[in-house]
Image (cartoon, rainbow, N blue to C red):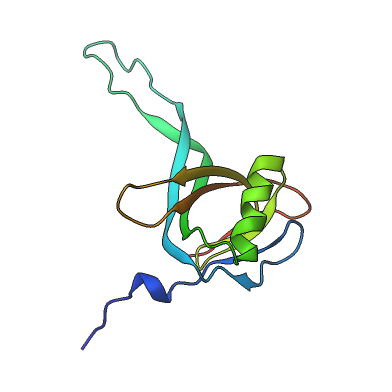
Length: 135
C-alpha cells in the first residue's frame, strides 16, 4: 500500500551564504517551492495561409521558495532571516528540491485571531556557488 508524503516531513535548512545550509528551520509552518520558466517567442509565419500559432521555447528556469514561520522571539534562525531581508544579504537555503544561496524578501502577518507569522520569499542568488535543483 502506498503512503502519502506529508508536508511536515520535508525539512528546510538555513545557513550563511556560500555554505551548505545545515540549520533546520523548526518553526516553519508552510513551504512552497515554485518552478517555472522564462520563455522566448519562436513563432514563425508559416506558409501564410493561416494565422500562426504562437510558440515559445524556455530560455531560463525560475525558482522561488515561499516559506512561512511562526514569529518566536527565541528563534535565532527566523531573526537571522529577518535581518538578511532587511539588510539585503543572501542566505543559504536547502530543501529536498533546491540547494543554493538566496535573496530574502519578508512579509509580516499580524492576524486578529492567530499567531504572528513571518513570510519569506527566497530567490536564487549567485554568491560563491551555483544553485542546484533536485527532483
